Amino acid sequence: MNKFYLCNAIAYVNGKPHMGHVLEYIFADAIRRYHILKGEDVFYQNGTDEHGSKIYKTAKDQGLEIQEMVDKNNQTFVNVCKLLNVEYDVWIRTSSDHHKKGAQKLWSKLDEAGDIYKDSYEGLYCVGCEAYLNEKDLVDGKCPNHLKEPEKLKEENYFFKLSKYSDQIKDLIESDTLKIYPEGRRNEMLALCEEGLKDVSFSRPKKVLPWGVNVPDDDDQVMYVWCDALSNYITCLGYGSDDESNFEKYWPCDLQMIGKDILRFHGGIWIGMLLSAGIEIPKALGVHGFITSEGQKMSKSLGNVVDPSEIIEQYGLDALRFYLTREVPTGDDGDFSKERFAIVYSSDLANNYGNLVSRVLAMVNKYDVNIKSEFDVEGFNGVFEKYSEYVEGFDLKKAVEEVLRYLDTLNTLIEETKPWALMKEGNVEEATKVLSNLVEGVRRASIMLWPFIPGTVEKVFGYLNLESNISFADLESTIDDGHQVGTAEPLFPRVEV
Ligand SMILES: [Zn+2]
Image (tube, rainbow, N blue to C red; front, side):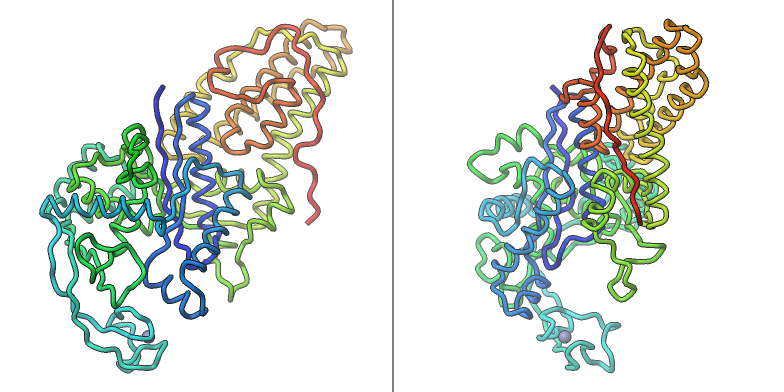
């Protein structure tokens, strides 16, 4: 059995989940379910990034204990996954002890490889912000938030020799040993390697940042985000713990999903760290874009922030899952538009799929059709192959469109053959053939839709009187002769907006 290890970026818990997280979780879950249908041993990591100065500061500003705040915020991400029907195999939290142990083991490996060195860092430090500020962010030489002049501060940090791996990383990307989807992001990463990746600051003094993972054998330093957070992709598999069996079984990662803003960290620093530690690198990075609302960046002041739970209440969860995978190009930016949502809901879901299911089942029942197992595959030829190729190439949108086209051909088949007219003419044989084909077509389209709208497809399988342990292997056979189907409830009822 093939294994498939899928990762997505862990969420930073200094705030609540937003549509960007929802987008990534739904993409990841669709890919996860696709690989389950392939019969693979799928392992999907998810979790939260709980250290760093922003979290430290947010907690202090709100007068909260840091651990208490991250516990509370972490729970909101767990809840949103539940709301979205996103099922993960492990939930990693970077403030957990086993994660810290794993991050320290990784650090030690880099150190043993001679890739960690101490150097000093000089910058403008604002005590109020507890952060270094850029010269360009100052207003009249002062911190714009605290209206105080920052101090010139010099600190000793550890650095990671990323520059040493720049050429090697470039080769790995060029040879597709590390695939990066889509092409544009691959080129972007190659250009960064071409410029030469630079060494990165890898730790902070504990007096500046008292909230993090301790650097091994140095009580004065904590890890900066790189070794602290990126290591989650292996510590969630038990790396650095007493039981590394999942790490041995599932690593390397088959697909690592990230947003476009963190490509350089995952395509550069993370790969460099793994090369230094002598650990295999991920096979592929899938880079998605951002989601806007009504054509603009979501912001509280514009009042265009989309609340997923409101959409779910109005249209149902699968409508949201479907909209995001069907409307947002998987490797690019996309938009959430209420008008467009209503159109997609009624045309693709209610009409193209929902009505097809109800009409076919209603006719089969009305005419008491004795279903035949012969299936005219002509309309189905090549559909599954293209659908698979798209998902494997990190293009969920095209995969969904392929299924929608197939649903179109089934709807056209009804219009062209008019089973009700055939029955009226007494041509039971032809009507039986057409309706058997339609039932089989509905079954096949539903299997391919399961990764995107699992709850709906499971209902359809119920109406078809089929067991819901769905798999792509079911595409190699057809429904049994004489199979009895049930009746369908409306899948996507009319929504009054
Ligand atoms: Zn400040």
